[in-house]
Length: 147
Image 1 (cartoon, rainbow, N blue to C red):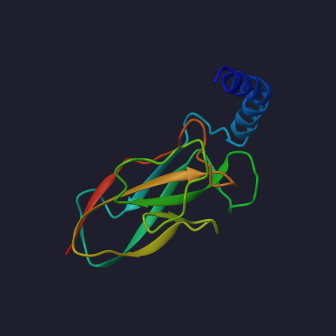
Image 2: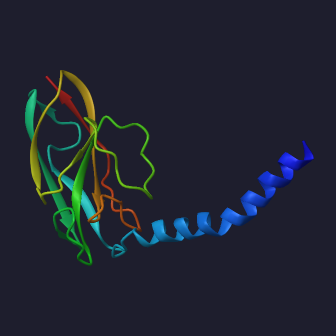
């Protein structure tokens, strides 16, 4: 049993620098955002009643919009979070799903179709790799009621 512990400890010590290096490399993939950058939902408004299909317009100030894959300083692209209660890891690329929609083409609005009921909407700006900026550029979460 002691031999196994020694092998595990030796392996951990040998690979620790590589683990730290990959964390450093990952941190370098996060783009800086100006402190005054803001992303927001222009429409619908918080508390608004909407039809099953409605337009969501995205707003951004203090930064510009660039498509995914285009690495330009002080730019990013939108990600719309629908009914997301717990934010994903904001140090990694945002996962694409039916609840986290990527707008890597640089789009600034979209049509959304949701079932009747209350739903939440929130925007997150991601860099060329879909990784949120530092500091985080995230909108206030709004609630809409689909009739």
